[in-house]
Length: 432
Image 1 (tube, rainbow, N blue to C red):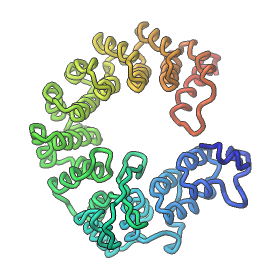
Image 2 (spheres, helix red, strand yellow):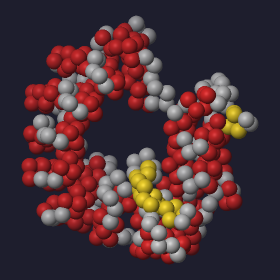
Image 3 (cartoon, rainbow, N blue to C red):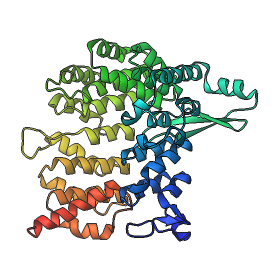
Image 4 (tube, rainbow, N blue to C red):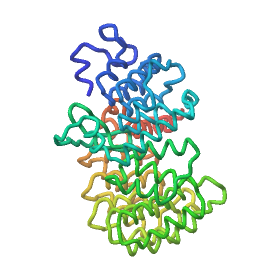
């Protein structure tokens, strides 16, 4: 990632020059569309004086992902003039929900009138109802083949980018329509939101994500019932949608009553034994992992040896210690499952199992020895997770293992967190 800039003689570290040929390195990174370098520069706090200008540039370039990243690090859209950004209608025409939402951050919504929001909503609806390909053909008059490419739209979602006669549009209009309706106070029906989600490629699409998040945020009985009813639907995609809405409803319920905990457990426990579709089963098991309850564990653990890595991953992340013990300890069955998953053929499963063991700090010696064995894993993220787990246990073996790993990869919060735990252990050990 950084070699291009170093070979150009560009300094990118704190304390080094922050310009190249008179232009801020952050601005240069945005102009190049280099999201990774933008993240590194922001993380190192070496370019905060240019975040507002970088945000304006990212918006004008239709780089919604980078614009949102800059917002996370303090960019203030209100510092920009209207002429420095783009209109909501231009954002809708881009098809990028990340770009559209970046223009409507809480701090900047008052910039846009209700009539502008209505106009954007109506335009998004036209794109969504006609379809991107049909609208591209209408606008260009071309009957050539539309080129479709899947691209990342923000940190969590991806879209199809469609190109025809030099015009490129992303297919995120369903998400923008839903978001605009939400801002306008329009309560879109469960069925309409589900239909929008199901018109996409699946869970990683922003339209699906926006629909499930909106429904989960309602936290009302009518929405819960509509989602729970989908459990027995013959179409896996509808079962998946229902499961995700139920899981997120419970997950985001921050009330003291936790009113959806028992209903969620009552739905997901039997569902896990009946589900035949792997994607839906994975979603159900992830939901069970949100419960520190013996019934959830009893439903989760039978899937620890499943042939599909996604399912085993859900088990590895979903095992929880008994919250009544201090520190929380795993049951014998959960401990046995985790010891196996720490040697799983899939490195992501191994890493996740190590992190689960690390976070719960069960003092059983078999877990410490399994973490020590993972210090020599062929996969660096697994070794980092093992180092982290041993550091939290004040196990001296983490120190030499951390030295073998070397410094964290630049800009990696995860690596910094794992190796930082070793530094904190050494301070505790030395009485600081």
